[in-house]
Amino acid sequence: MTVTTNEHSTIIQHGDATAEIYHYGATVTSFKYKNRDVLFCSKKAILNGTKAIRGGIPVVFPQFGPQGPLPQHGFARVSKWHYLGVLTENTHQTTVGFSLEKHQALEQQTKIWPFLFRLEYHVTLSANTLHLKLVVKNLDQSAFDFTVLLHTYLQTQIHEAQVFGLQGLAINDGVSKTRDVDNRSYITVEGEVDRVYEHVGLNALTLKDRQSTVLLKNGFKDVVVWNPWIEKAKALNDFEDEEYKNMICIEVGNVSEKIVLNPGESWTGEQTIVAV
Ligand code: TA6
Image (cartoon, rainbow, N blue to C red; front, top):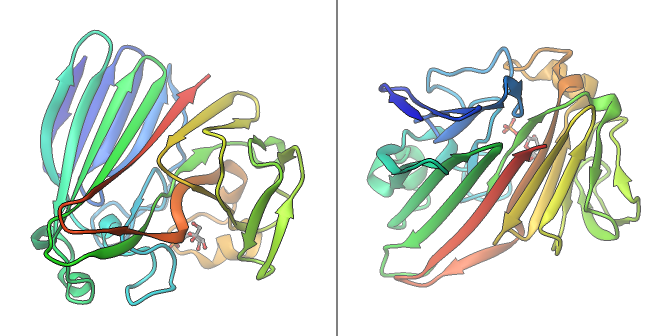
């Protein structure tokens, strides 16, 4: 087990697994198990802190999407977080922590969303598993509300990808701009997909392609599935034209309804990604 850190990122190596977390956005940019890349990060991702990182797991807070007073997906993914160091290190697991408070977050945005808050993010590696725990605490004297999401980019072969665990759920479809129910026993992607699956009761989702990746969630209610497909991929300047074939975003979050926190209250969401 080793943890190495510099001013830009922290790398954890635990047994056969490694993870790298950029302090900018507390973005996990890589999770490898036995040299298999579980997460996708674009070859054109901008890592110098001038733009949200195109890949890995950007943290979306306090606003999902463009609907609201802030720029798309809020400030957590474009702020430099404080590295708290190694929190646990034993033969079973290694955990590192990050925090973000108002005075460290991007000022252009905290002027608009002016509440005192603390985010604490714990990243744990154990065997074939990456575990993420996000705690939001209200340090203000007023209540605030927010939406939140772990914008998880997974490595896949899109023509073979099947996503299990979302059957029969209400969807808010960002491409067709309609609401519907997805009755497929598993999801495949054959064009642009940008969907919010609402109130996902199941805690386990599985991505199957040549290998399997299992996502477990706790505390998060919704799941967003996104692939930009051909035209939108070309329009993204930090994404290669053909990379849509190698990724799928399966993002756990609370986005269909806002979470309200009164002064002193906390909310916790957790995601576990298992390379099977
Ligand atoms: O989570 C899906 C989504 O909100 C899509 O609508 C899509 O635009 C994507 O996120 C990427 O957003 P970004 O701001 O990172 O380009």
